Length: 200
Image (tube, rainbow, N blue to C red):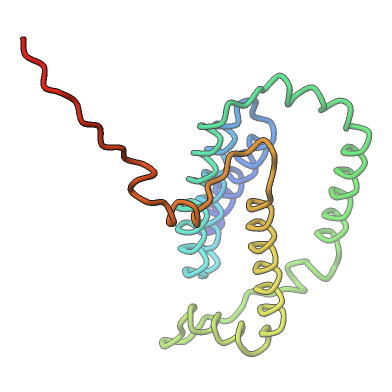
């Protein structure tokens, strides 16, 4: 076994343990930190696969932006952990069979002859002028341009839906009317009062 295979098994073990701790940790802050560890380890696996651009994007986007945001939101919210654990056993009848079905599907895919080492040999080494980022961009905008555009439209719809849900009028929310604030006059806010001077 060479050093690359050893590093792969080491990173894979850390990734599996961190992923399990994400869903089994009782504290949501600890779960978010384990998810950060899982992202870092997954980026290491991407580096072993010679996909440097994807590894850097995984660290910059998910760890540097998304997970920091999650961590701040989890730490700022007052989460009642006891209330979150109340519905676990009530939903186990639905979650248990779904989890077993997913494990069976993964086992069927990994055990098939089409995914073995013989069916998927190691790719050839790239040339001297090979660029991972350039090749990824070429594939996205040529072979996978329609799925890429479809994903962008779905993300646009999600952004519009999130903004619409935020801007809906509710009775228990105090809102500011910007037109009334702009149309205000000085006499409506400030009143000049003439008072005699007081002498001690």
